[in-house]
Length: 119
Image (cartoon, rainbow, N blue to C red; front, side, top):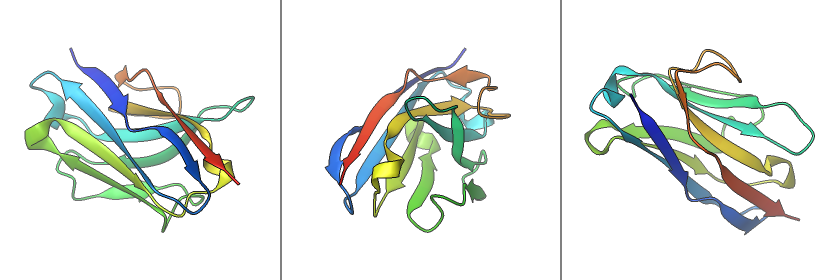
């Protein structure tokens, strides 16, 4: 069993930065690939970024490529999303997921953290 808890969301001006964290409980955390997804009001949940078990391979949605960076620290059971050059369209609830297979399919989900970017 893995429990995921996100933190680090908040209100930021356009062009600013935030770092989201996803802390996992359970000793099997390092066995899972991990990912970040987001859901804006009135929209479906969408893929943001994923990272493999070792942290050596990552992938990003085109909309965040070059601005966001996903990392993980397996010794701390924590994954991060470093968000730079934020835009109002990045406003959403951000969810972390373990073993993600798609925007709504994963072994485990966090509860979400709100990110609001003002123009």
